[in-house]
Image (cartoon, rainbow, N blue to C red; front, top):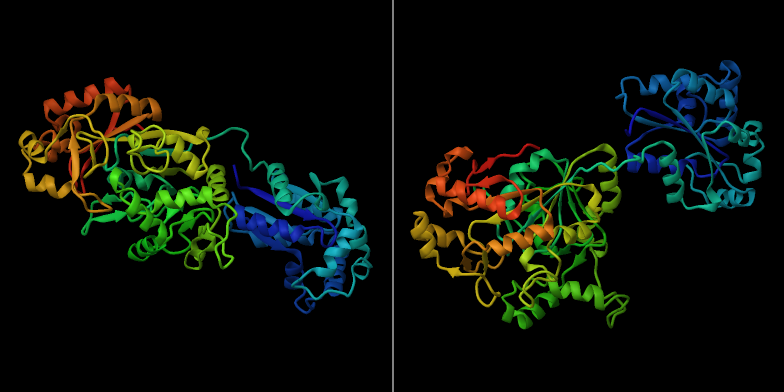
Length: 535
């Protein structure tokens, strides 16, 4: 559990107390309570100067036996949620610590920071403080209380020597002492992937379940477009498909490959504020030369030629290389001025989500049979599209995964042209004849989201289903396009309203995959999902 803690910081000047406090506020949303501000609240005439604040604090200690911090702190946190983390920067004498412990006996954690005298003096000479300082570290320590502050090492819960570790090390040790790192791993991440060649209808499935999550995360690149029903229809190439169906925070992982114009267009189109979207600084940027090279070289395999593969290859081949002007050949999200308001490290955000038990939905792109390693080479994409690959791109451990949803169509598709083998290819006219859907409706549906090319369609591939189930280990299957089995399914709002042949088809999908079909998409509409989940 994250909250309900009062963190008392102590240590000599420049030992790192303020840095630790700021990081606890920034990363763990703690509330900061500065004792020099409490002093000025109780004694408004005291100037913002080191010596004056020291004398005023000593006077308060004498008149209250150090209990003034306890009383001021109680007033400051009155009305705050009980689970709040409050950081006090800083306590200086034993009676101050004892007073706070007496007032909040089960909530107090005392962390003492220290360093060698030479290191403290060096830091003091270069510090930039909000308080007017005396000219030297020795003069700052003339105050008796400041000289004796190291006595608090005897009563602290943890003592950290900050000249022997970095500021991040200090934070991690403090957080561990506070018990904010759980001793067991909570499975709060659900992963959604395609089980075929992409275009399985992942976007609408994500939109349906998006409200259940505090974070929506996307990996992959702009060579995949996920459609969500709306007026007009929404297509997401970079942002998670639940962006407009949820208030969740949006994350783009370090393994993503980005088209800057496209992601900026999506941010503007869907009015995403900078504090809602976080793009990892290590995400790769596509250059126009990447697009041109793919258009020239990869037409033979039916590539969408969005530059994702070329950019990925450069990320490997051009490590440490510079161009003729001395600029790095590899450009990452952190290097793009236009993206700067959105760039944040994803790992700390995810860790905070784990600590708070906030659910994460990781949305994979493309399909398992397009995997660079597990697809039908060379007609594959430039990444591993399985659950394992998506987790690696996101920076999420497999032990965090709760559910894996594998999305499959009743009739798999591939991009039109020379995009690779499919089992038993058929025509849209045949789909129309079998289902009773108008042939023009099927043709209009089967246009690719990214390149707007007609798709190729095939019979359901049972071998592909089994292989994808083995590769991904799904806990659930989302079956889409059941109206292609029978147009009457478009009117089904409950499972038992599906046609008998459709129910038999679903039963066989469950037998072959060994996984229950818990989400069923009947049409592209507001009310298009039959939800059979128990989670």
